[in-house]
Image (tube, helix red, strand yellow):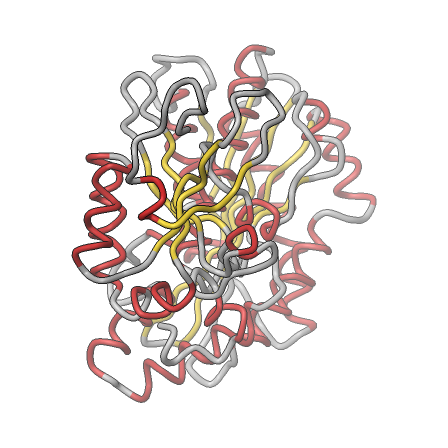
Amino acid sequence: MRRISRLDRIRQCGWSTVSPAGYGNGGPGLRITAAAGANPSVAGFSGLATCGSVWACPVCAARIATRRADELAAVMRYALAGGCGASLVTLTMRHHEGQGLKDCWDALAKAWHAVTSGKQWVGDSDVFGLRGWVKAVEVTRGDNGWHVHLHALMIWDDPVSIDQARYVGRRMWQRWNRALERRGFTSLRDLGGLDVRLASLKPGAAGGLHEYFVKLSHEIAGGYAKLARGRGRTPFQILADGLATGEAGDLNAWWEWEKASHGRRQIAWSTGLREWAGMDAEQSDEQVAAEEAGGDDMLFIEPASWRELRQDPDAVCDLLEAAEDGGYAAAMPWLRKRGLGYMIAKWISRKPLGKLRLAKAADVSRETSPRRGRRA
């Protein structure tokens, strides 16, 4: 997608080094996170730019979605322990090919604001004991254009019946539809405009297992990996088709998607819900994407070699797989065989505060006396 993206941050993601680029070397570091228990070792690069786009970058989207799904699952576990209730409300709008994605998305944002404000919302929340909500936006595209809709996970202080959940859901839909109509859209409540589901948070309960909510959290947060149903397609499906065929309609749809989704949030939390569940302050998508895996950087690819290596995604994957299977001892001959230069970080002192320097591969090939120092 780097060839066709119109977003500079997307083109630089995983491609360009950032300060401190390669710790002064100008190339990325190869980082291996050691195996732990049933989890195998994982290799990756440090010092590379990240875009933090949950909408337009498959790599950052996967990382962000994993974090968001874990956070949603944490809320579910906390609610389970407290004997709370939960329901899922899905709200959609009618759309047609002539309506642009930006207009649809703007209408959705205004409609959700109308749903969660006003005396009716406050009254229903108080009467039924609404603790909070988590809202996630999902978008697909089909024969009738862009389909923008949202899922709202509702957490209640006490278990609620399906009748109660549907009652609140219908009143939410009424405010939703009125707000849409003010912007030229509509929603048909009984034809897909509203869906309310109730599930118990008790493991093993019929009709709604706790495991269902864990699965649901990954489905809500992991929209990047979904396959749309019927004749609709997710944006990443559109991208894949456009790259495979060069179809102008798909490429134009992707460019519209990049522009309209930029700067929008996928998941939002009601005020106080995270604190109630004992969670830390929410990190931005950019912060989550920029986090690097644990482990030490012992090998740095030289700038010119990185510029050559990154041109071949398959070779990049081969290097990472070699590092995961055999560690740095396998990564170094892999690079040498292809004439790619690298540098190795080596301790030159056994003292705790010994300096870390970069040495050429030839330097570390010589044996080091245990009395004079040791290799890290």
